[in-house]
Image (cartoon, rainbow, N blue to C red):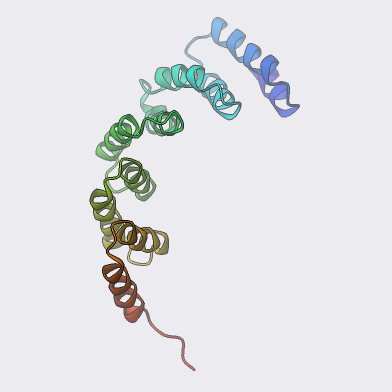
Length: 168
């Protein structure tokens, strides 16, 4: 396993993958090594292989959310936003209100041209964390995308109007 890390640090990715696989052949339940292998495969864009390794890690409670998140990202990169959305929704069921997961769900809805659903998620994020400017920006953009520019501008005016001003 340590040899895999050394190979990886020196950019010898095939040898790193082989070292990780060798360690897993000796000890299949060494989940940190499996995570190292999955992460390496993801980084070098071997998405199908990474998907298999993350799929194995999903079954382990300690790695479930992280592995599921990577599976969602892989599905997005493979242009499968509906499947990715289902994965992120499952993560959200296990860990409701995780802001980053909500952002990913909204992004999936955008990719599916479901702008109203994306906007609703951005509103939920803003209800939980009113100063999440990224959510405000994306919410306004969803209104613009839906040709509701005036509503987008009202949201900006409303939010900025509520923010405390710096004294002059």
